View 1: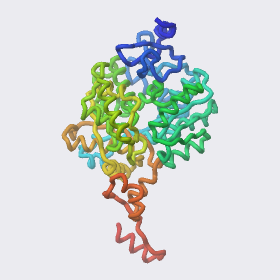
View 2: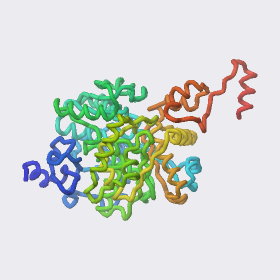
View 3: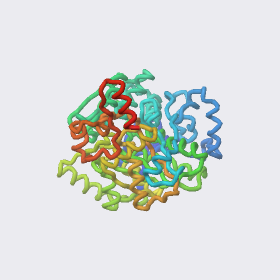
View 4: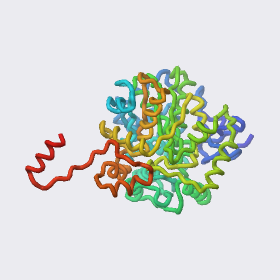
Amino acid sequence: MSTATATATSAAAYQKCMMPACGATYDVGEVHTSCPACGALLDITYDWDRLPTPTSLRDFERKWSRRNEPLERSGVWRFRELLPFAPDEKIVSIGEGQTPLHPSVGVAAYVGMNPGRMLLQYEGMNPSGSFKDNGMTAAFTHAHMIGAQRAACASTGNTSASLALYCGMSRLMQAVIFIGSGKISYGKLSQALDYGALTMQITGDFDDAMQRVREVSKRLGIYLVNSVNPFRLEGQKTIMLRVLESLNWQMPDWICVPGGNLGNSSSFGKAFHELHKLGLIDRMPRIAIINAAGADTLYELYEKRGLRWNDGAPDTKIIDGYYAELDAASERADTIASAIEINRPVNLMKCLRALQCTGGVVREVTDQQILDAKSQVAANGLGCEPASAASVAGAKMLREEGVIDPDEQVVCVLTGHQLKDPTATVAYHSSDQNEFNRVLGSRGVNTATYANRAVQVENDLDAIVRAIQLNS
C-alpha cells in the first residue's frame, strides 16, 4: 500500500479510482485528474459512518432562513454535509446555485406532457450564466485548499467564463483558458476577456484544446478545473438536491439533460446513488442524456454499439474502435449547440455508470429540433442557449416514442442563459434569409418553425398603428 493510499483511507473524505478493478485511494490534499495507478477517473468518496449526515433531506430547509450567511446563501454549500471535503474557512463562494425550478404549461404542451408534469431547472440564473458555477465553486475551493496560484481549463465557453469569474472576484489566482479556433460564441468569450483571464486560442476544436491544457497544466503545475477534476462534479451534484428541494423532496420520474462532456449526467448519478445509500431517498429517477446529432458520441456508443458500464468492466474496444473511425475520417463535432460540441467526452465512464445506476437512456436530436425547442422554451418565458434546449427536444422525442408517459413528472435541465449565444437566436427569428442561411443553413436547419420576426414599418404613426392592429 502506498503512502498516499494509507493516508487517504484514514480520512473521512478521499479520492478513489472509479474502476473497481483498481480502487486506489488518495488524499484530498493531492491534485490528480486521473488515477496515477491505472489512468482512470477519480471519485471523491466519503466514509459516511464517520461523518455527521442529515437524517432527513428536510433538515436542509432550515438553512434558507440563514441566507444572510454566505455559505447558507449558496445553493451549493448549504448542502455541504453531502460534499464534506473542505473546511468552511477555505470555501470560495459567490452566491452560486440560486436557481429556480419552473413548471411550464406551454412547454408541457409542446413536448406532449400533461399540465403540471413538465418542469424546467434554469441554471442560466447562476452568476456567470450557466450551470458551470456549481462545479467551479467546488473545484476552485479545492484549488484554494492546496494553495494553487493559477487555474486552467479548456472550454467551449461556459467553463472559461465561470473560471474567469471566480478568479476575478476572489483575486486568489490567475485564470488560463484554452479555446479552439472559431469554437466559442462572442457572448461567452466576452466574459472571459472582461473578467481578466489569460486566453489562449489554439488551432483545433475542444478536444484539441482539452489535450493541450492537460499537457500544459502538468508541465507548469497549473491547477486544472475541467470536469476530469473530480471536485467539479461534487458541486454539480447539488443541482439535483435543489430540484428535489423544489419538489418538496419528492422524486421526479425523469431527468433530461444535455450531453456534452457528460459531467452533469455523471454528477447526477453520483448524487442519487449517495442519497440512496444514505437512506435519504427510496428510489431514483431515470436519466435521459440528449446528444446533438453533430456531436453524438455517447448515443453512437450506447444506443447503437451497445457499450455499457457492466458493473465496472466496460468493453473499451468499442470505444477505441469508434474513436479510430473518427480519426480516420478526420471527423469533428459540428452543431449549433456549441456548449455540447464535443466528440470525446472525458466523463464517458462515469456517465455509463450513472446510466446503469438510474436505468437511463440516450438520444440524439438535430439542430433543427434543438432550435425549435429553444424557441418554445423562450416563448414561455425562459431564454436558454441552444445546448440547453437539447433536453426539451429530447424529452419531446422520448414522449413521441412512448418511452415517457404523459403523466410522468419530467425535469429538463436548462444549462445556460439565452444571452450566452444570441447569434443563433437572432438568425432563427430573422427576416433576412441570407443571415438565416449564413448562421444556420450549414447546420442543416432549414426552417424557422416558430420564428417571431420583426415587423418592418415606416416611421409614421398611422402606419405603426395599422401594423400593430394587423399583427395583434
